Image 1 (tube, rainbow, N blue to C red):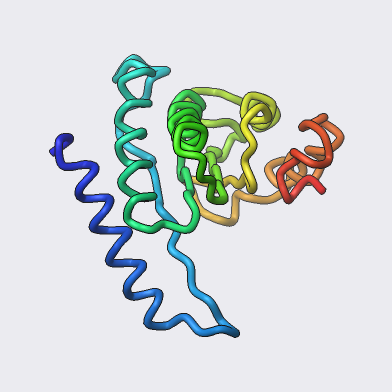
Image 2 (cartoon, rainbow, N blue to C red):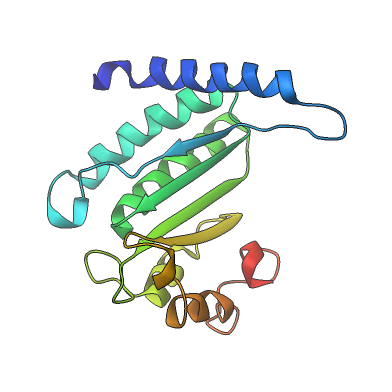
Amino acid sequence: MAEQAYDMNVRAASLAKRIASGYSTKDKPRWVAGSMGPGRKLPTLGHIRFLDLKAAYAEQVRGLLDGGADLLIVETCQDLLQTKAALSAIFENFKKNGRRVPVIAQVTIEVFGTMLNGTEIGAALTALAPFPIDVIGMNCGTGPRHMTGEHSLSLRECSVAGLGSAQRRPAFCR
């Protein structure tokens, strides 16, 4: 199935683009978000090599963009290396092709306030800061009622944590 990744992503994005265009108006445009992740292989746990995962994401990025995706979302990542592999593939594609779309990166935070392998929210934000991500979000694998307190406090205070310049700081940090 891996050899079909590019074609499947082109077809998915093309279909979504065609459907979205049918509902789009001048006053209410519609966009297609190319969703990437989460996947079941985590590089931190040794399920897959980082470079192999990045190469797989590169095929997906290429397919989604060739199919017409207007933005990319790296979602529900439980492993920081998984997130970084996807983002590396995305931004290398942008550089190679001279085309950029908005990028959203989303990490999954467990009920105890860390990613699955123990990465704290602040560490995840710091590790993702070098990437010119447009929006960083998080979700909770155990449900929305756990996304309060320390979880949201870390996001609200990210500008205090020093996530880059005001021009490069993700939207929620401004």
